[in-house]
Amino acid sequence: MSPKDSFPRHPLAARLRARARQGLHAAVHSGWEWIQRHGEITPHTPGRRKFAHLGQGACIGFPVGSIYGEPWISIGDHTLVGTHCTIAAGFVPGLDLGPDVVITIGSSCSLGRGTHIVGHQSIEIGNDVFTGPNVYITDQNHTYGDLKTPIGRQWPENKPVVIGDGCWIGTGAIILPGTRLGRNVAVAGGAVVRGEFPDHSVIGGVPAKVLRHFDEVTGWQPPLRDHPLISLDELAALSVDGLEGLQLLQDRLREETTLREEAG
Image (cartoon, rainbow, N blue to C red):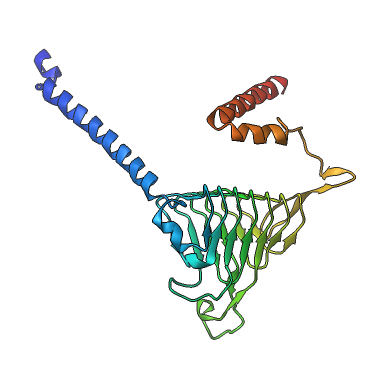
């Protein structure tokens, strides 16, 4: 190979192609950001009219999952619903589900990407409830008592679901019919939850059971390993400060991690 062959024969054309690819890349991403921003459902978009209630500052991210039965869905103020989330009331769109709201989501909640909430009778989610991605919550199961009929064709059974204020539901958890979570219950990722669980408890497993709980006399049982990095009041203040507050929290977490590594 001659030295001449080791260089592009048309360097200008190569540069133009590279610049065109960069421009196309930037245009695609800018366009998608524009579509996502303008596809959101908020109190200021026409989509709000379908819901029983869509509070001030609420936002449903785009692209959405399957959302239907909106007249029986109520979403509180400042609640954020991630992209690809399904919120469905009833079996299919167009059914009359009666006079009462079926799915109630409180204020200041955050539903992670890909979360599914499927309601037929009653699902009540309190205020300040957070979910990780791909959480599934339903108030209906199929029965299986008839041995001659496929389970998917048997008559379903409904039991109301109640999730208390301040709960955290980890990634991939499944909340089954009849579940009642108290205040500030932490649900481990991947847990399959059914039954009643008290305030201030940590649950996990398949089926889920109480792993830790708070006792007014003895505190957390089993005891917590470490003291919190910051107080709840400080954490609330940081969240109000937006990006600057989150950056400060990130810096504190990094410092804490460094100190633990040096001590360990």
